[in-house]
Image 1 (spheres, one colour):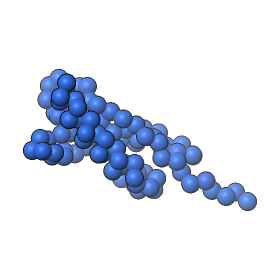
Image 2 (image 1 turned 120 degrees about the vertical axis):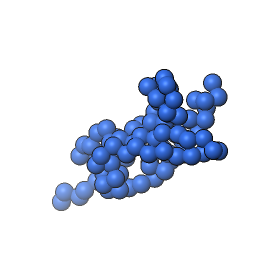
Image 3 (image 1 turned 60 degrees about the horizontal axis):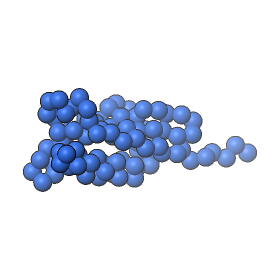
Image 4 (image 1 turned 135 degrees about the vertical axis):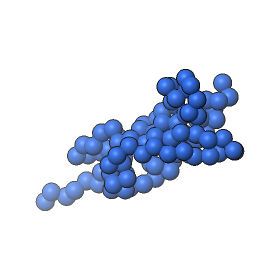
Length: 91
């Protein structure tokens, strides 16, 4: 399915972009769901980035991509990643 292959390219790029941020940047930028549109090769894609989990040791982030069409937006391509928080010295 060519369409989902195109989504995968966009998803991989967005996951690289978001996962390269520090945990402080992620926490700050993901206080609320981020939903935006990107254009690749004259095609528009919907991207949503959400903070799923915020523990003492890590944060888990989900990135979702679709093309906004019905029924595609109901089944976006998603990926999650974990960003470890720096270990604090408790001495």
